[in-house]
Amino acid sequence: MRDRNYGSEEVLREMKDEKVRFVKFWFVDILGQVKSFSVTPDEIETALEDGMGFDGSSIEGFARIYESDLIGKPDPSTFTVLPWRCEDGCRVARMFCDILTPDGNPYAGDPRYVLRRNIEKMKAAGYDDFCVGPELEYFYFKSGKSPEITDEGGYFDLMPLDMGQDLRRDTILTLQEMGIPVEYSHHEVAPSQHEIDLRYASALDMADDVISYKVAVKAIAWLSGMYASFMPKPLMGENGSGMHVHMSLFKDGRNAFYEEGAPYHLSEEARFFTAGIMRHAREICAITNQWVNSYKRLVPGYEAPVYLVWGQKNRSALVRVPMYKPGKENATRIELRFPDPACNPYLAFSVMLAAGLEGIKNRYELGDPTETDVFHLSDQERESMGISTLPGSLIEAILEAEKSDFLRETLGEHVFAKFIENKKIEWDNYRTQVTDYEIKNYLPVL
Image 1 (tube, helix red, strand yellow):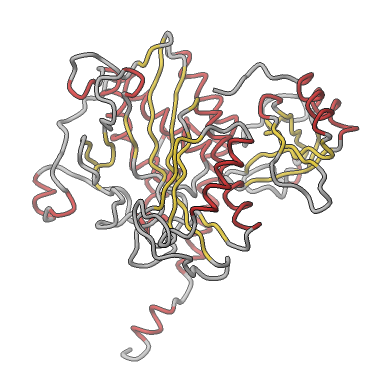
Image 2 (cartoon, rainbow, N blue to C red; image 1 turned 30 degrees about the vertical axis):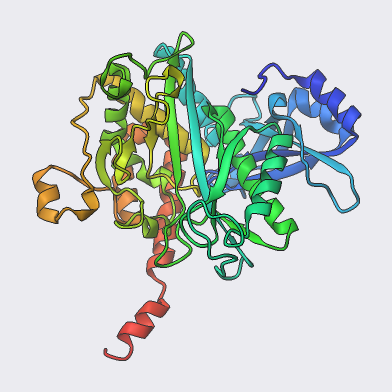
């Protein structure tokens, strides 16, 4: 776990010791895109105390023109020197920012604040921590202009099929230098697809780490003349990239999801939490799978769960109970399998936590697990079993989200409204395109 007591004095001392020339202040817009501005050492002491003002009117989902003044207040506990360097060899560090209004209050449009607010609700409900461990998949391509693969490897393949292992190794070393623990890495199922798994951490720390992870993966690839993409479905006919999220709640320093002797070692709270995720899955899907392309991945047959079932061995399930270390308290968790790595992690972890807490608060009943491969059931069989599905497109997900009072409360009115507005624009832009598929299949016959 990161040292949350790392403060301004330690930042100033480390900057001097490491001869840091610039500090980048990082934050994300509502879509999860990283934004940054640089501060020189001469200004850093003032910035740590008062923050730095900037114009938020051009940041997606942030302020309108007439209320554009915002402040980026750096979180000193997130300070780290970036392992890659400027061309002239100068050292550059980064800190994540909390976004404030000019009067010093948290800005409602800041995704980091959304997560902080939901964590406070968790603590008010009697829990200490929400720990998550995401598994982010991604692709290496020869450029960002087309998805031209770099290898023909498959799941867990080694050289010569896995040509990306050197890039993964360099990325892991980079993440470790940044203080981000890594569990392991491997080649994934699709050609040119890879995965590096981060060790579980508190949700806010992990959201910061996910952003750092994505920047590091792309930076190391770029330095080697390659392009890394977290696009959910870049290759037709191949598995897309997911972000399976392992999660558990802690109370009084103990894993609240664990109960010795219970089925799957899941406590009553864990079952309620899982039921909350299942009940609100369709509403939160627009947040965890936020792009038009996300729904090209969420189709049957490519290891992407679309059916609202849970189980243990069933990898077609929306929620799975991993059994890597049966009976070990801290290893007991649930795994949410439908999110993808192109989501905004602050908002995604917020809705996962809030949905689970709703389940606990209202004591939602979790049905029986499904260990049948749901992909191979007929529509009639699934209907008779009461199995429903995730939204099949971005617009379906947005319409589901738009009518959700739960989601509005979780995100706050500002982020909720701006997110829905942005996604409707994206859908309109997409649906008015005339694609190569249409020209090829319809022009000759219509």
